[in-house]
Image 1: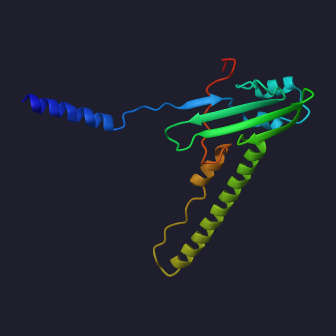
Image 2 (image 1 turned 90 degrees about the vertical axis):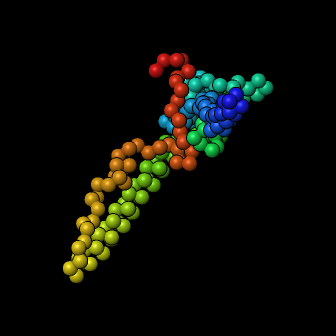
Image 3 (image 1 turned 120 degrees about the vertical axis):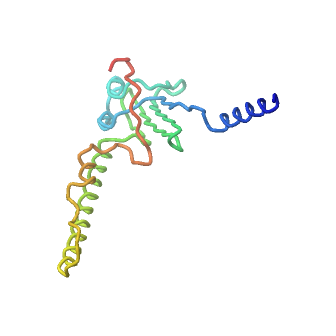
Length: 183
């Protein structure tokens, strides 16, 4: 009897441990930069203007005061690869000489996404019209024909939503908060 109870408890414990009941929390670190702010960054800006626009970099450079690195990292168990972004601003004589953007979206990127979305919507509408014309011709022969789909479909509902600044392969999480702690 004791053996049966012990083996049952061991079996249940093994089942629970192997079932993946491990919680993996989302990890968000670094500077979350908004596309509108990154688009306003220009060569010739002062350090204080860059700090006002983008905030203070999370990781200060100890050996090279002529560059600021804005890192962003997001990891979640829902996504296979973590999201990594970096914006490096180089200064010369206390002014922005150049900047290197690696994955941080800008307003130009948002505009391109909007144009691509509009092209996809118009192509979908054209395909629906062509399919509707083919169905109406077969209806003339006396067959029961379903009406063409309503033009207000899920495609237009997607058009009403603002485009995501990141392609679908890389999710953009919501920021954890502002550096000052105020909403």
